Amino acid sequence: MAAPKRNLSAAAIVVDAEEGSYLLKIDGYSRTKVLLQTGKCAISTRFSVGGHDWALEFYPNGYESADFVSVYLLLDSADAKDVTASFAFSVLDKDGEPVPSFSRTHSGHTFQGKSSAWGCYQKKKTAWGYCDFVKKTDLEGSVHLINDCFTIRCDVTVMKEIRSQEQHKRKCNRLVVVPPSNLHRHLGDLLKSTDGADVVFHVGGEKFPAHRTVLAARSSVFKAKLFGSMKEKIVDIIEIFDMESDVFKSLLHFIYTDSLPEQTTHDGEAHDDVVMAGHLLVAADRYNIERLKLICEEMLCNHIDSTIVATSFTLAEQHGCHELKEACFEFLASPSNLEAMVTSDGYEHLKSSCPSVLREMIARFLPPELKAAKDIIMTI
Image 1 (cartoon, rainbow, N blue to C red):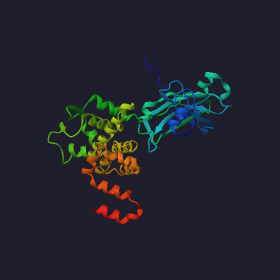
Image 2: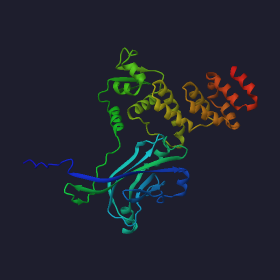
Image 3: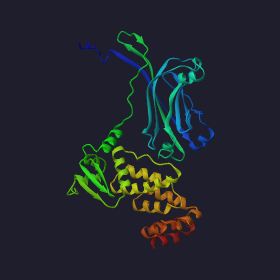
Image 4: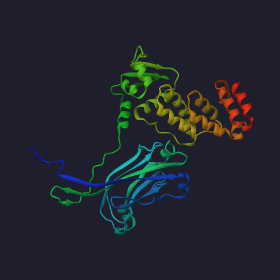
């Protein structure tokens, strides 16, 4: 027997809610980790949403486990009780946009005022959030921790009341919240499953099935190779000879998900991540994937030392990376760093492939009063 149908009008129920956002900037993350042990938090300034005061609790070493960063939303109004709110926490990228892999959403929780409970019970009733918000190794190995700083955005929606057309008010502890986009996950799964793949790349002895339409949508170079006048004679199998297989695998991952694979953060492997960033920068420039190129450039800017500065200089000059080039100049303004660079493995390659960079370096480091000498050097 079929269940009776319910006749619902779009105008029959009105949800009265108020939304607000708050940005918590963590300036000096490393120092905060030293000062606050596991279970200890820093509390943000108050902000108001829905007629109530709120604050964020930030645990750099976790509320329960030191492996995670914990974040909680705190109802900071002592006389409030039974306040229903949904909320979302997101780490922001350098453009101020939420990072999907570092975002969590809670569809609804009923908070009570600080005077309504005590002890652990108080914690559960006045504050709610995630003890495992972000794994510390993931955050510290990401490009979103810039100069030891990052920002968390908290979006809060406070439900105030639900009214029917007859104006009968009632409480409700449920609220529909639209989660962040998960398109990147679906496309990542498509790449892993190879369902519908119509082109195969042979790179470094490995095979990589992919989808021509996805590649063409993300790269003008791939679009030309697969659909345009540069179209390969045999488009279902393409050989790439001058790239390592792990680099191409990371390139495909970014094309499908708009993110890099999880980076290693162990001390012995950190250098490998920087080397990979250099290879990916070359690949991104080759296939005109500008966002990936900028991400790699930023990573290289943040990891300049005497062993790789010559290689970074070469990459900057050959692939038009102005910010990376300037970062190298700033690093080499120190005489000790300059001396160390000259003895590094990459110096000879820099000298032979980009001699103009060395002339520019000498001209920059000469005193201002030697302008004539600078002009002479730049003409050699």
